[in-house]
Each structure stands twice: as C-alpha cells, then as structure tokens.
Length: 135
Figure 1: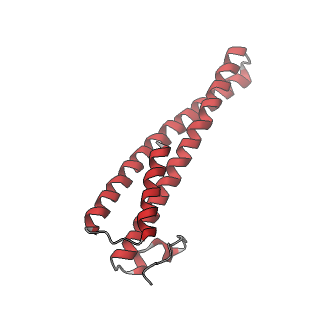
Figure 2: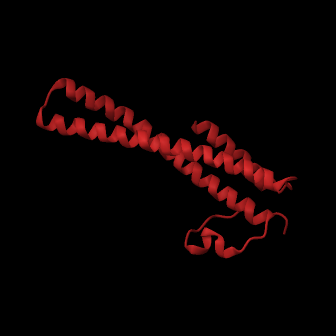
Figure 3: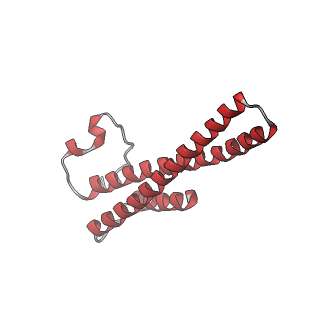
C-alpha cells in the first residue's frame, strides 16, 4: 500500500512540476478527490486496527506485570514486534494523505482562482508551494 501511495504522489508531483496544462481540470480534480477519499478510508481502517492492537498489547503488558509467566512474555514480545510495523504503516498513510491534500490545494490554486481566505495556509498552516514555472 505504501508503495502504491508513493507512486501516485510521485506522479502528481511530476504533473505539477512539469507545468503541463490539464485538459479537463474539473474531471481531474474529481478523480483526485476520489483517490483522496479512498486513502482516507484506508487510513481510518488502519488507525482503528493499530489502536485496538495497541490496547491489546498494553493489556497483555498489564497482565504480565501482575502474573509473570513465559507464555505471556512471549505473547507480549510478539504483539510488540507486530505493533511497530502497524504504526509505521499508519504513519506512511497519514503523511501520504496529508501530501495529497497539499497537492489538491496546489492544483486548485494554479488552475482555478478562488478566494485566498478559504485556503488553510492563511490560518497558520504553512504549506510549501511549488514554484510557478509559468511566471
């Protein structure tokens, strides 16, 4: 999943940095928005799974503190070893979706005049913008 998201983001960066004009901008933005919705759904599912997995890991740790045993220790270590990749994967999804938001906003700024007060960057969130090659 992480590689697919990275490839999609890279293709969007390439499109934006190339400065090519998109023929049907509204259709392109709708498709990008659908892709963002897909990744948001993927992200929320992984958040729930990671959160529940972390709760189980902490519960096993608490039981292990009060009832020390080798099987519980092995279970705890296995859960901990699996929790780290879950957290890493969620981190990749979260950052990828945030990047897609920035790219969507960049496409909106470049190809459709909108009021700047609607942009999050005006409210303290600083988004790195791409240099405009048309200037």
